[in-house]
Image 1: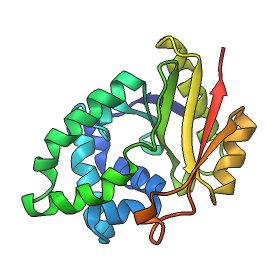
Image 2 (image 1 turned 45 degrees about the vertical axis):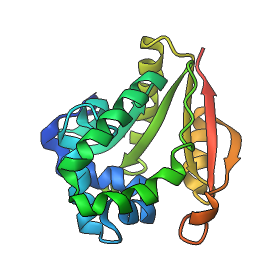
Image 3 (image 1 turned 135 degrees about the horizontal axis):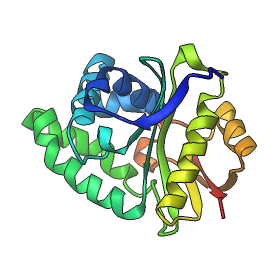
Length: 208
């Protein structure tokens, strides 16, 4: 791991790099949800959301792993209360990032997944964690997870939680090595099983 890597709060002007990293955590579903199949459009939507305050994808919830002036990785994490507020703000800001005619299609994709992100009162939920290709296998992911542990403790939480794809064995191995345990397997909504992953696993780590 590079000695000059630091973890700091995200800023709005990092949207071009952050949007791509966030989208990478959503895989093909992200392209369908935000770009209706168009990858560049999906990146553009997330770029706009990252720049806006308070929403589910805002810079205000981002921790950035940075090496000199380069974004090496990103983590976005929420308490239960923060996620509820962020989702409400996201709904209001949809009118700023989508054309009116696009909003029904977005909702049809998003609503079936609304119950997947379970966050309990004693948890800090890691919604997104991604490392830039040029910084992989350098310990960036571990550094971001360590930051998440401290952020959870600072907010009076005793657990970290996250979900990742059933088929994403490398991510599961990283989290298990860090101390997470697989708690639950979540199958995709019936209407989405033909176009999504095999499902997700919920993983939890006790930190105190």
